Image: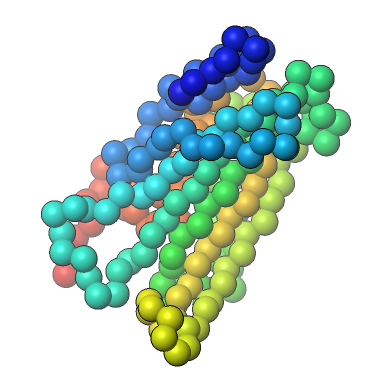
Length: 191
């Protein structure tokens, strides 16, 4: 985490607060390059579900899941944000064909986000976003599985306090759900 003395103290404090998040060990979180033109100040965290390095890589992998959570800060505020700080989330995860075909997948994925944010009890406003489920078919010499299915969650909200660690934790919970990780404390049985 690198901050500049030219950055407002509140923005630097927000970055520090984001980095206090306690996330499950299967998810790696690290700073990434933020977008430069969305707000006067921005910071971003990338998150990725880690694979068991000791397990053999199956021919048909369960897939990948990753995301980014971007902190936007405008000391003058933004009318559309209803505040000075905005969090923007993006999650992409490979899903199996059965899940991708479920017509309720977008509603369920959105409920993961709403429930995770509410469970952390940090006040927020102006929550909005989209959930997209896609299926792709590869032809010709393109490497990869013949059919692939993905879930994308895009959302943004305005935190109403400077306590941002729980927002990062909620974001990582949604990433875990999208990746199909079992709930914390539950061990997946191998066939």
